[in-house]
Amino acid sequence: RPAEEAFRTIPLPNRVRELLSIIGELYLDATNAAGNAGRCMLAAVLLRRDIIALAGNEALTGLKPSISLAIMGEAADALVGMFGQEGAPSDRRRQIGHCIAELCNSISLVSADTGKEFVKTVLSKLQPGCNAMDPMCLKLLSDIADRSPVALWSSCNTDVFIALLRGSVEKVKKKNCTMEQLESSVRALCQIGIAYERAKRVAEGGERSNEIERALL
Image (tube, rainbow, N blue to C red):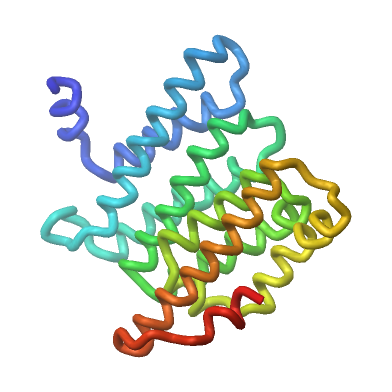
């Protein structure tokens, strides 16, 4: 508890930048693998919590929306870059993916337009990995659909998702995939479909949509 209280005394922008710095130092560091993995994952969990905090109103954060967006923009550039690096252990990469998905949500809450653009950027970065059935990319796609359904569907359409998952479909047809790849692809498809329904309910004032099957197909 004393450590938590001391941590909370650090201004939110400083915490985010320091946590990003720690993650950047440990992300690909293979020395003391077990210890560094634990430190990196702890930093990522704390960062994710602060990303959620940045979406709070000014009375809670003490930050104007423009400042919160600028800080999240810094985090977005760093995290998306790290996620795309080769050679990162899957457990650390997964934690970075959680932070990126949370950024999609928090940025969208502060500015819907900025959130849409960020989601588009992330999806464009994910496309090669999703087509290659990279489980980490597919899991991140699922997480974005879960955390930011409105931003996802307001910035994209079914053609985008067809492009993202075309490679997965071809590999499944040829039975050229692992069980993890198959499970990740199916989960991504289901989450995208669920996100579609959630986004439609918001857009239509709570009315249910019967077009979910079209999106899934």
